[in-house]
Image (cartoon, one colour):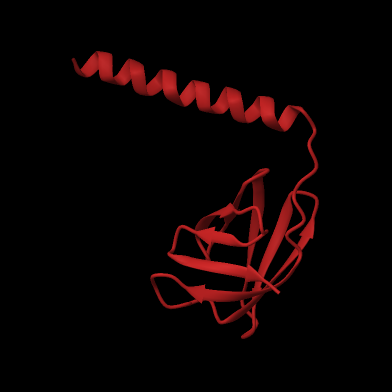
Length: 110
């Protein structure tokens, strides 16, 4: 049973990587996330600051807060972005170009 579960998990992981590679191989332009955002605390307080900005070059982004801290990041697909430490969160890019982060906050583009 454990071996079967491991096989299913491995197959799912391989499929995910294959689909991700195929999507990126199509050469679709990265979404434009550059700009200023207002953090909406949902459901947790905005620990990164109330006003944040994103600068972008291709798929590479830098997350900046109003106290001078920053974190590097990467647009990982047309609908996902990842922030490295000290921000350390993954985000889903919504159709209105706002970002719902895995840390429970929502950034609304200004």
